[in-house]
Length: 222
Length: 141
Image 1: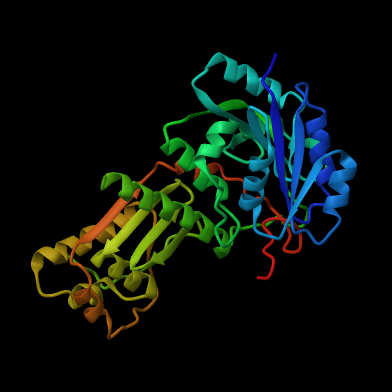
Image 2: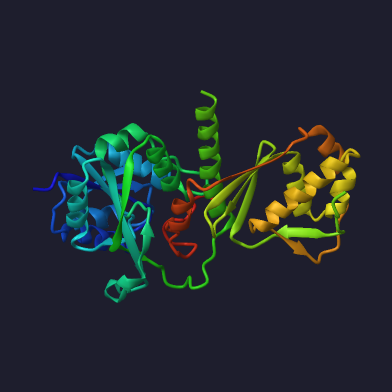
């Protein structure tokens, strides 16, 4: 029997996609013990949509996806934490596959998977085009290690919190596995065919790199 | 003495991002996932090159020292080789303050490169979203 897991979904103005995200959790072959949506100060119908879809909803003033994930992490009681972005989806066997991998290597702290993208219809996603997803939407991690790692830090751009946090997990010596299989789907919003990274997005990545540099120097000076 | 052409440079591509943190530039190559610390005198050179100063102007602003001329050439070659800067056709600009900045900086041309976050940077999910939709929507900005 698989260990228990709870799912945390940080959500900001996600009324159009949150029900589908929750449905993809309810369709897991290994069921979740709890589904917690942390509403990050949405101004749309996210709370109503998440509640109707069957999630427990926590609400906070807008603070960012990292802060919302941290809030959810503090609220769960399961042995494992799984996370999902409010516009993404899991494939039904995601958790089953990840727990098989965990059972095969007890040293693992967490398991990730590849993601494929879709625009409108998830059934059109090309599962052969998966890319490694070191991502909130693929993460399954031991709750105690997640808590030891501390809060997810949102950079001003609200982009890059997972990079910083996963870097901290690894620096603490914990092993994370990337499964070479697509187990989650990333939604590409319509109307953004020529999307490019913005300066604000870059600022989040640069903040993560700078934080890693400072941690390295602190370690080296010890 | 190393040959220093009258050359200007520019950030190589939209995949390169840089930010000044208290006089140290952190430069990220999103294509490779590597990030760089460009510090001390090298940070002044980076700032000058990105602002459009020529290599010749920067070298001339250094205290007269042949060894340091070679160092600045080596630094720029490293930045170009790592895909951070490319040669530019733009006419050089001038900056009367650059000599003072170089004199004030610690003299080392310090550049470090790190790849410990490369897999995370390369894989990070940037959701394609419209400006008015959810994340990465930025309330109040």
